[in-house]
Length: 229
Image (tube, rainbow, N blue to C red; front, side, top):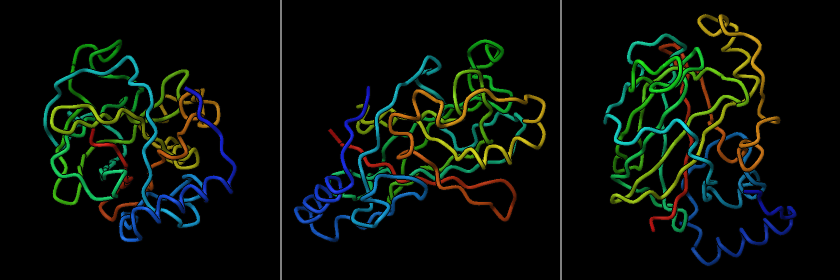
């Protein structure tokens, strides 16, 4: 679905109206760095509705509730800290079920193709805590033909799906990670963010803010605004 394009002035005007109607305190939830609409970039608002994106063909329902989703598969360590907030109030949502899945370092999904012998690696569900945070331990995703590097996410509140989306990384970071094993065994990735048909329709608002961890690997964070109903 293509996005309606608004001018910078229009976005800032609409953000100002929303902030005024909700009150300044309603916009204090932190929003992840890296991209985002102009209103977020200039600090007019600090939480926005996360863009809906295709579920894709590799979803498997009723995955394991667990924090470590690697099943021992190799790769650069990646801790994901996903914060879920109500897009209308910016308040954290406690107890939301956050479901993620992505390709392993070789570009394979569990349950499909080369990964069909296992239905659990790089898949899992966590519930958000009192601060709206769900944490996962995984590895940096690999790539496969036709798609940029990404992580799928689906959120459920009280048994109802409230968001289906995808999370992305900067190309510069991916280039750096992919110079090391085991990613360098699968070189010459075909698609970068700007060439990805999913990313170009809102992916800049679903970019993870990534930093190095003292223990090794990376920490990826994002705040996702959703409608409860």
